Figure 1 (spheres, one colour):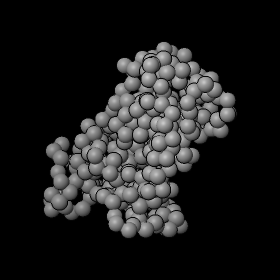
Figure 2 (tube, rainbow, N blue to C red):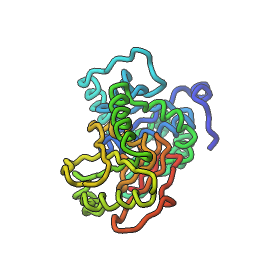
Figure 3 (cartoon, rainbow, N blue to C red):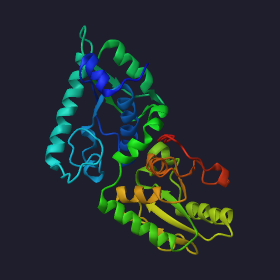
Figure 4 (cartoon, rainbow, N blue to C red):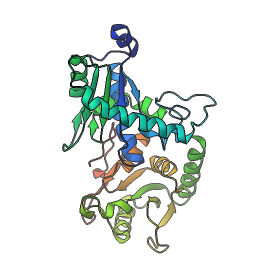
Amino acid sequence: MTPVSGSAAQGAGGQRYLVIANKTGQLGNRLTVYAHLIGAARECGWTLLNPSFCEYADDFVGTRGRLLTCGEEQANARTVARDLRQVAYRINRIAYKCARVLQHLPGSPIGWARASNMPVYDLTALMERAEKRRWRYLFTQNYVFRQHRWCARHADYIRRVFTPIAVHAGASASALALARGLGAVLVGVHIRHGDYQQHLGGRFFFPFAAYAAMMQRMCALLAPRRVAFLVCSNAVIPPDAFAGLAVVNGPGHPVSDITALAGCDYLLGPPSSFSAWAAFTGMRPLLVVEDAAMPFSLADFVRSPSVDPRY
């Protein structure tokens, strides 16, 4: 498929709308889907609508003050009323359910795609089908829509859209300054507890002692430089969990935490869209830990040009 610009697409057949129709979990998941669909929309000349980002929209400069869309930062943008965002999302859900039926009508301009029971739903194939069938509206549902080449190509724009607003940027900057005062190298550690106790049968629910051992390993790998750690978690961390290590806790808000992690020199944690997003936006090397007992080296930390959670 040959990419077309938004203006060329409109001239050829009018505005076309790509819609994210459901909430795919929490912040990291929603940012991941949003980023890949931004890449697809920009690459193919569609307008992206995302009412499902409602809880987080006013936390980022490119979505703040916008009800359905994203874009460059708006001067003096005001928040949108939470009730209005929820109404827009409910209407979006009704439209998605209607689209599931209307897509079958002959010559329908409405498309529908649900990513389920598959590891990845390739956006290239989906957008090619949309072009072939001349859809004007395409509703998507679920988490695994991906097109890494497009996401990487539009990465700078995506990072600008999801620049955190000042309150989160300030909180993350304060935590980073405190942590960097404790060491020459800063390692961000994402401890995912909570829902990970059940997720995939608890496969990636590692105890605090396992994280402490990984942090000690980082100290050895980075010696003789002194290592400090910025730890972000959805769990309450016992005060003695990381005794003997230079540790600063993240700011505590999901957006501030993910922004702070993006400012570290290295990142490590279990497979998670949260740390994958931090690595992408900060362009930082990430170690995805699938087995806390496995040894690792600095060569195992990888930079990804796209948002690429493993699960």
